[in-house]
Image 1: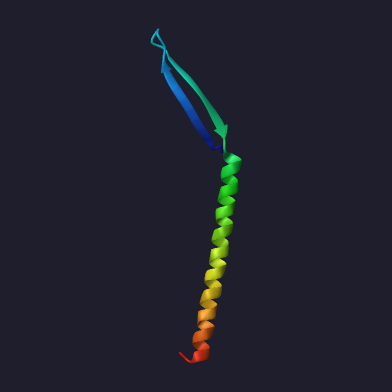
Image 2: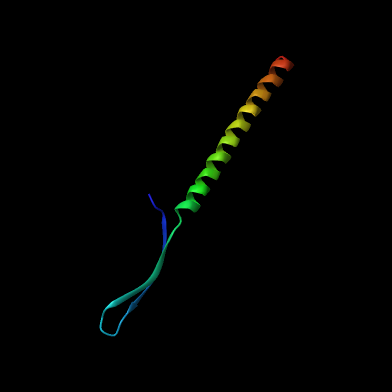
Length: 65
């Protein structure tokens, strides 16, 4: 699959034709990198949540609650 960013300008010509002037840029690699960064951040967040839960459980157990 390819991700593409498009930008175009449409102009009506004197004879009634429509001229399209534009560019399409493949942004697949950029998005893959962005998605990978998000996945890594989510994994770090899950690990941190586990550490917090374990610490809270250890504190509760040591305080007798």
